[in-house]
Amino acid sequence: MRILVTGGAGYIGSHTVVVLQDAGHEVVIVDDLSNSSASAVDRIAEIAGKVPELHQVDLCDRDALFEVFSRTRPEAIVHFAALKAVGESVAQPLRYYRNNLIGGLNLFEAMGEHDCRTLVFSSSCTVYGGAPALPLREGAPTWAVSPYGWTKVMLEQILTDLHAADGRWRIGSLRYFNPVGAHPSGRLGEDPRGMPNNLLPFITQVAVGRRERLTVFGADYPTPDGTCVRDYIHVVDLAEGHLAALRRLQDRGGYHTWNLGTGRGHSVLEVIAAFERATGIAVPYEVAGGRPGDIAASYADPSRANEELGWRSDTSLETICADAWRWQQANPDGYPN
Ligand code: UD1
Image 1 (cartoon, rainbow, N blue to C red):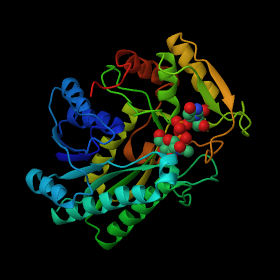
Image 2: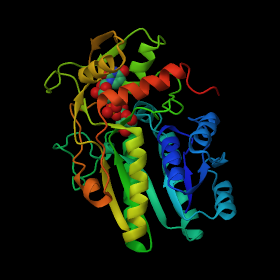
Image 3: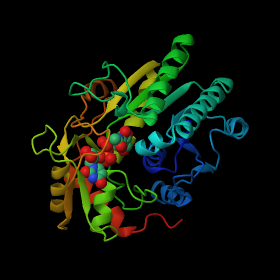
């Protein structure tokens, strides 16, 4: 198939493009490069042996997006392109709603107009809101605790309504848990601009000497060691989930939500220990107060995706850390441009 991947130069997008190309698909990337690098596209080409077509377009530019659809005639879409920093979304809600909602609406309209109704949407476990019963199952009510989270809840609702109105749409909303790690080649990885918000990039930047020490946000949560528990999933496993979802949508259609997680939770201290075991490098840290908005624990029940997609993620935390470290060591300052 010819698959258009929005945000295909980004962290999860770039790994997914490699998986799609390896499976024989032709990929067109639409990315405004606002939080990604054209170098990632060169690296994709190097790994997969095929150069994906790149269109530097902002999804909010409706005319430019429609033009890409007319020119490339995609048969399916994988939609990653969005703003994703929780704290920033609290400070700049309108920017988040405009970018994520208008961008999404333009994309879905372009799809309908060009007779392309197969979509894999990048959602998040953030749609389970703040007070969930664990493990998290797809049937749980959706809610959000930040504007970023609300954009995911709202886009899932829009897609539910779209499928209800016209059963020709085939849509999978993938609720990611905590994507981490890097391509085993060390050529693709996470390259946050400025201070990393997320745990693993912060740890690897400490290990490579870019930051002095990690701050552990909170050690008095009601968890076994007091630090927050999350479901960390290797980014390549996550990327493979998109291919599995596309296959399922091609076979059976429908609107679906699928959790993409491992089903296992690990605390912040367990992640630090796994990184130290995997790399032999000590990670200095200090404990501070909890980060506003953080919940004590979050992990998936991934059984729906395991059964319906024939997909599972069980890459160990040590392998995840080793891969993240290989990427960081080879690219201490991220992508060259
Ligand atoms: C965060 C977002 C989530 C988003 C996901 C994308 C918040 C509240 N949630 O998830 O909506 O979908 O990223 O990847 O921002 N930690 C530290 N020190 C650090 C950084 C993190 O102790 O310097 C801790 C956090 O408190 C948390 C755990 O590490 O307990 C994981 O944090 P992070 O990687 O930011 O992921 P989430 O907060 O789970």
